[in-house]
Image 1 (cartoon, rainbow, N blue to C red):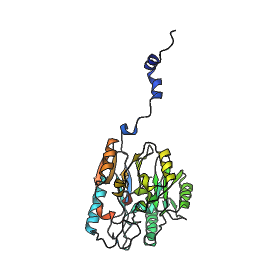
Image 2 (cartoon, rainbow, N blue to C red; image 1 turned 90 degrees about the vertical axis):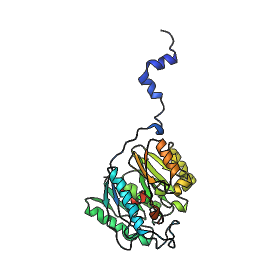
Image 3 (cartoon, rainbow, N blue to C red; image 1 turned 30 degrees about the vertical axis):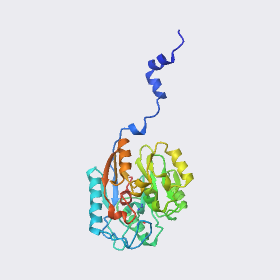
Image 4 (cartoon, rainbow, N blue to C red; image 1 turned 135 degrees about the vertical axis):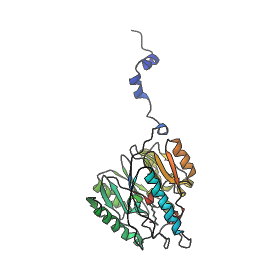
Length: 299
Ligand code: ARG
């Protein structure tokens, strides 16, 4: 037998040669949506009367009817995409209750309750737990340590990512891991404008560990962790992060985000996502965006 020519051998063993092909690049992946269920709370009592983050300026007027209209538009977007939206009844005196993501974290139907860092938001945690108790969720955890739910926790296929540095106590990361039985990876936030993980990092595909993030929001060590875990991540600019572009919600195909985050929208489309631009300008004055208003019920 003639010594094998690597080129011919390659051509003759197509299935084997596939082993040597690099993984399909993220850019070329076929995207598909999975129906979701979100918990939202209308901003009926939304206001900026105190300041607990750098975006909140009580001297800046808020257009309350516009805030409500923008929120309703977001809810319509989810419904039109085929997602279910559950509604938490807003309570007077809790202007930040519209930001439901901060009030809990639900994974595999298990509810990890929140414990807010600021007194102004404390009662929201109980309202969330009550909603779960009344809506058939059997596994509820009342937290020991301060944590702001999905504001600081997010879920990928392999890990639960957890922010710390401004709101969530690092001890809550271990507490969540124990309750959820999923590995929790802690990430240190360093820029006060991005005081929650959800403002600095978005999960784009939760079936494939695909994320977008703004490196400047993280400590050097956490940036290195992100590089290792997500070598194919979409790296966003500070400008898009400041437009709350990373406070996005993805169903695997559609990414709902502020239309103002133009560069990020382009980069997402290049990756095969369909972007759905919304305007939540009034809620931005409270320091929150799309994701903050949308808690995912992963049951
Ligand atoms: N005013 C709220 C706060 O400072 C806004 C929270 C928005 N949520 C978020 N995950 N960033 O707590």
